[in-house]
Image (cartoon, rainbow, N blue to C red; front, side, top):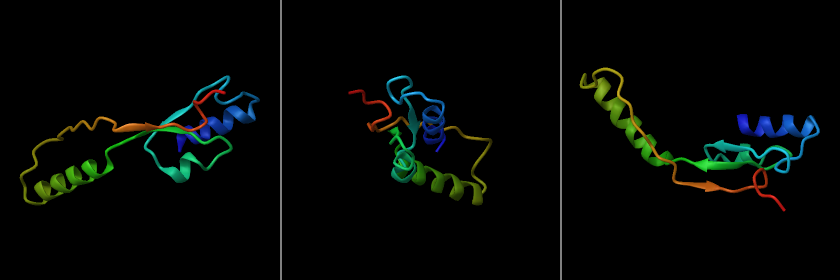
Length: 88
């Protein structure tokens, strides 16, 4: 959503997206990515794997097996290129 807003503000300020400013967001939510005047390129995250890990953490928390604040890394799974980064 922030990337979509950034692209909109750039256009309102008279900038060309992507000619003057390329914009890329994180999280491939097609609704928000395609919402504004300029469809925003986005990094795809492994949503299913993230959801499974959240479920495991909740289960461990409810069973008293979760100690501290665990950290998990989920590398991106790809990029969905849209016109906010594609130049002609």
